[in-house]
Length: 402
Image 1 (spheres, rainbow, N blue to C red):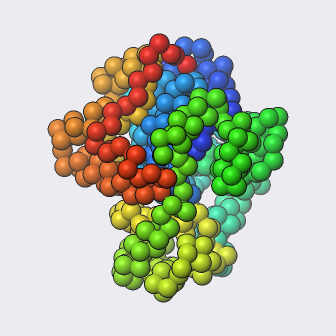
Image 2: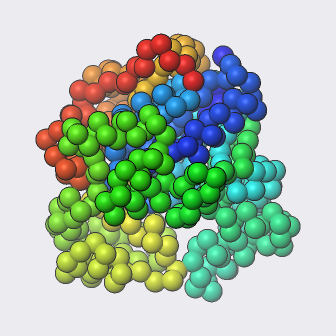
Image 3: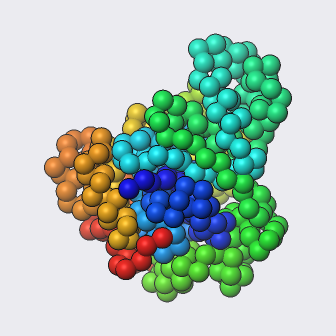
């Protein structure tokens, strides 16, 4: 069975996401399986997911996906490059994926493929280093370094957030045989608070939840996501947020030495010194970030450093995950799983207890994920309501196919 991959967070799942899954089947055929690689309980901008990963995965299967695999936390809390690379490794390892479908401002994968080729060339890193010396942020320096090597029109892809992530996908898929397919993003733009064609962004929905506008927020979620969120809220697990555990985060940061921060500063740019100085006295996360930030460092990067420090993650994710962990599936998804067990280059993990048979590397990754999820529980209204990660199997949705 042919399958298309989608890399996502579904934080939360909204109708734009449902549209993308429907477009994947329209473009590739109604029998195409949809395999999502989804961040777990922590997301790429450096934050807690608003709802538990199994609830979000089950909502995805009820909204068009067939199979949801977890993007482990070391990659989920990484740069756009690390996030894309980890998710792409999972799709490649599955052995059944023919296309990667993603939302895009331009709706055209060809310029992103051309940009990716240049970014992966041997000469580009030196050109980028020269631009970084001028003191601008990494994204600005990279786009400037790309100019002259591709057309202005192609280079403009790095000025649009979804297209930028698409470039990272194209880089990560080079040589894999998986074809990138860009679908025009429908409705409100990335980070926009606007309502367009009945769609809003996930960030706008999260803002509504923070403001107490829950019913309005729910109205913009996919129906299955709204139902899942209500169930999670009633169980005491949603919404998860920093307001429930800010002092726990700050306590962990105050415990760190300068050397601990230095290990997380992968650019070796001295950012760690700013964190080490400020973390010892900041009374809130907002105060810490305000003290540390400069025009060179995007806020998302700073938040990722905070959360990587909080969770005790390694400075950089390993080359690739040690297993393919299933979060949710429907009957077509279980058929895809059967195929994956024959084709996958990494073990497929459906039962947490089975990780003991997968070797030391897999056990280390799973233990790290379990520890991170215990800290995620502190961000929920009722931490005691969050089940132990080691006792949670995938959600199997019977009788439903996307």
